[in-house]
Length: 302
Length: 302
Image (cartoon, rainbow over all chains, first blue to last red; front, side):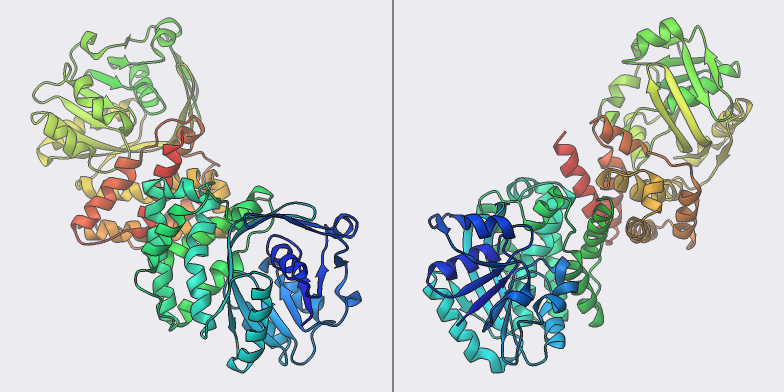
């Protein structure tokens, strides 16, 4: 299968880079990094071993890119309003669209824009960041959990999982996309937001009884939201997440990096959509709403 | 009556200064400002007219101060753990203790330490701050609403109100101290905390739909807390408070000034005590708890 990476940053640079290194055909779309990657390639510093790719197939416009079997969406969700225009030259009937983003509701929106595409969610459990032009630093973990929006695309998805595993990416598969999205939000909702509002990394949060107490309260509210939407998460999940985050390398969540660089925060998909979904099912999430409003206030001052 | 001001800052400097200007005997306790006030007096820049007091009766230790009829507590509540030691040389049976502080539970604690004193709460509706040594700036309002912890001290309190009015301070009286304290918290809980967490003054909060939305949610929760404690506030209070705050001069709440100067924040009396009181009556205040924990986290980093 041929892959096209839309957004060559912390996520797309890492996973696309590994697929390319494994010999798969990968074409990359880049914006600010286009010239650099064209000339100097892609550098991935990874806890699993550093590597460099020369002669990267990089493009500055999707219209110029070759045909593809799978489009990897690794832009931030703050670009999703432009997504339809960006990828429409690449998407045919049956094209896989792998949504490697955080939040809720991306897959449903993309499916509406491309009714004949195979939209597949990808929950990435990874600590990575773009350190400079064409330079990705991968600090921890790296597995992807795939889940198709429509079950009929399970076979296609399994082929993709095979490719990812060939590229030495731990890839798994789950049936219920919505539950998987809520499961991922369990980490993103408390830790992305608190890292910005408290201006703290994960270990500063976990080393404070106060910040941990907030994280725990918010985790419980995410559980309620998931439950309301028919996604029952394991009752131990909040404590597992706290334990896991306590053990993580000190980490600036992506939203903290966005905040530090005064880039638009991913509030709509990570916060507003889950709040709306729970509300549709009659459940309010006031703590998450307060955190979202704090983030919106902070974002409005950039 | 003779007055003793404990803490010659934004509150004690202003009210004590006005009482002294009106010819009443007022003795001031000062710490860092003692030398300055001793030599250069007290300067009050007020929207109602500036004035200067020379030959201020200022002391650096309560043990050296003359006898008094009324002790005005105008320290921050963060000093309340030292309060018993500070004022015990001044308090006799029947001495009035006027508690011009924000929060909940101060009067009950002071009464325990001084069972024969006449403990009276004073809710100050004022925008003022200490700008420098012996220099108070008064920007808006200035009324005090008094309420005795024990009704038998109503007569004494009315004499005090007369003195305050002689000094051109609008003073009123209310029977139910607990309700009055919760009524005051209705402003303090949202606006003190949000000004710190969002690093914003009152008009920046009120000009943001997001920050206003948080303030409204918290106001509703303060209403629930008050209700749980048997203090029914007027149902229109939240909207009145928002309207009033929208019209206020842009103002840094006292907690914002404390934050800017990295002084300990008044979290215990303004946040933790109301949370505890409501919880005693079976009602949780999760948004206020989250705000308090955010403040405690921020405070722990000073």
